Length: 253
Image (cartoon, rainbow, N blue to C red; front, side, top):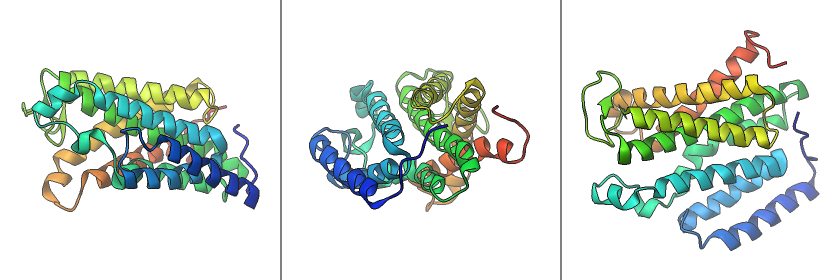
């Protein structure tokens, strides 16, 4: 089990100082907007403060992998009107749409009983695995999906349509889920093949459910933004990972 760092003032001051320094050095990279980097610094401080460097590094890996896949075929997606806005740079809404659920679970590890820690970390891992799965599926599907259909009716639709899926995009989602799960395993945020299988599986399921939400609720409710849908997806993934353990249906031992 990942040992939690000491929750004292010195540790949190170190987390704040290190993240301030690292954000200052990294903000020239075309990954986030200026305001996005500030919010990323807050996120990094919270994760380093609660989970130490493994939690922080896991989200850095998520950001790097997500930004990399966004750049694949970017000129083609831009010419087709399917590219992410701001040249693929993420803003505060993207930072928290992806990471709010995981951050709350990380904070919960410092307040909940020790016996809950593996379960909360499983939800943390699943939330980020699902988000990377979504990013991989969306970006690969928009560029290389040959037959894009609406998830509710399987009717052919244009790439980039809310609720659209493709074989190539779904395969990419699975690859993103597995890749992020391997990062979580390498950093000892989760342990064992059972946990890895569960995290990868629920990440893919949550990604498909996100497409279902996009094809139904998001089309009806104008206030349901992409960022809110992203938050719902990560919440679903965390819930699907935690529920079987909490209800005693499975054991990771």
